[in-house]
Amino acid sequence: MSDLREMLFAIEITLVGIAAGVLSIPYNSFLLTVIAGGMVLIGLLEAARIR
Image (cartoon, rainbow, N blue to C red; front, side):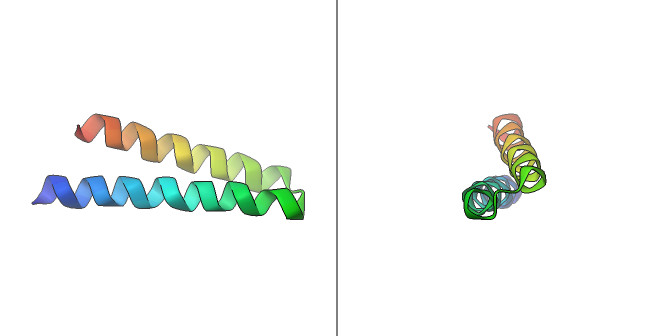
């Protein structure tokens, strides 16, 4: 059950990063883009580690 929780958390981090990346377009924010990229990378690496 803990693997499922960890996987859901990794998916959540990835989705929040994608949402931040989408929001960075209208706000034209480089910092938001960097944060979004980092969150997506962390989420995907966490998902790969769990799998």
